[in-house]
Image (tube, rainbow, N blue to C red; front, side):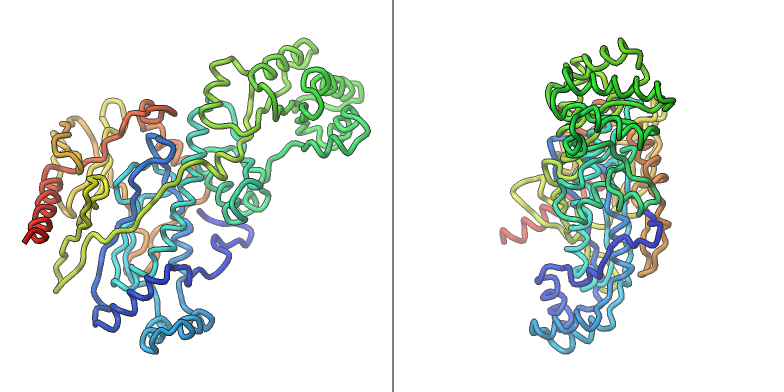
Length: 489
């Protein structure tokens, strides 16, 4: 996403961010005369975190920044010399510039297991060098975006979710990422002033318990806050006792505001502990009885998609939510991997495949086109479909097949298809216009609306079809048999 106010998306040179074996392989390729061989690699994940039905693509903006700035300066070259790499390899790195092509699914798109999120096509040393950084940048970003979207999907329409998780993040960069990708996935804003400034927004916030504790009593703290921030007077009511102290003192503060000519158009409370369903219902009753039906109720305190759904079932009253941990540090991991799928030899592409006894770990080989099929009548996405590059698709009547189980097949009719990947870099040149946060957020919202509600369920979601055409799955199965036959010789 575009940055504002002089910020760069990545704050430092990450060219050296690679596992050591990437450069060991790179030097081996160089010394073995394979420098100019072109390879294709796919980035994908095998399972959705938290047993979810979907993930949200994120991190492409950081990959773009990384690739654009990828170079090896004097400091990096000194490291390779100290590490014992040859003068020939160090000279190669001195003149290094990424010259390949990268295709990717745009940030904000709902995505599913075993489909190519990013495809890197480049001279094999270049493709190998970028592996670790690309995975690192994508994995964390997708965890934040997916965690945030699960929260958004569980929250009623019209209820704003604020991202509050910076202090729970694993480091400063994770704090920024959780804020940015939380907003990208649908949060109305973030408490993180740095992240907000990066995308030309204003940070959101209420007050802390320490603010209240620093005054002689709760009422004094509330009045001081109301005097300073009448345009956003959200009072934290659970410091001492929510129902017997906090809310009565909030009501007393609102009456004091009226008596002193301070508008009460933007008042409310935040509850951060206790039985949120019970307390919020009682709070609403007390506020209405006191003549302040306009007061908003914000709930926070370790909220998850599951607890939000429980609050709704119990009739909890709330107008906004503050969510921290489960955006900045959600449970589960993406586990994206980077696998070679093809190698160019004498101008021809040779498909590559990694085999496994576990069918889900067998890589989908070869360079591929990836499409999303939409039902013409409903507009819902019905499947993502892989083909070999250039393969024609029958868009009137198509049999799609699971790449891991040939017996799982489905016929689809009356559908439209849209390519999922876009070209980001072509022959080393950036050709993709990375949008700003608001554009990506609107795109994410529109894309999520095309996913069946059953796939977006918090618990036991319906499995979304990631399939291949019959031609592609037959090709994959034949390649598996060819390689297994070689092993058995």
